[in-house]
Image 1 (cartoon, rainbow, N blue to C red):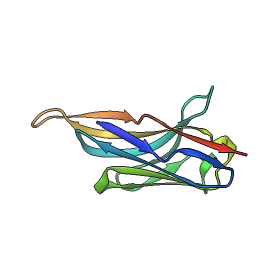
Image 2 (cartoon, rainbow, N blue to C red):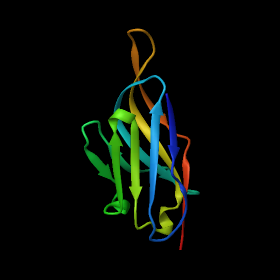
Image 3 (spheres, rainbow, N blue to C red):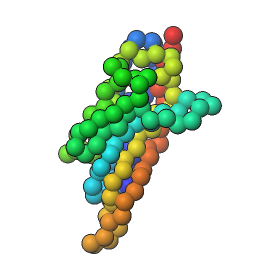
Image 4 (cartoon, rainbow, N blue to C red):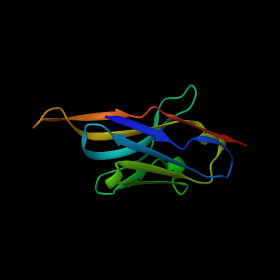
Length: 123
């Protein structure tokens, strides 16, 4: 299973960005999709998650500014970020939890991470 994230960049405070992440390969069933971030010297933290049924949760620090969504037909998760702040600067990682095919009639559950995309917000 491969996750390809894109959409990061350098923006000014108050501007917006949209991140996307596509899952491909032997993925069979996708349960939860989410975004995490890690700032320099900090631990990785959860930003937002969305279940297969569309239930969402997000960190208090981004509520009202970030929106997570998914397109199940495209195995893609999005993170729409608005009113960006310098403290949102981090490497953003997408995460997928689900099941992959490992044989003709076999599957195994997994927890996969994308390569990370840098988001930098200048003041």
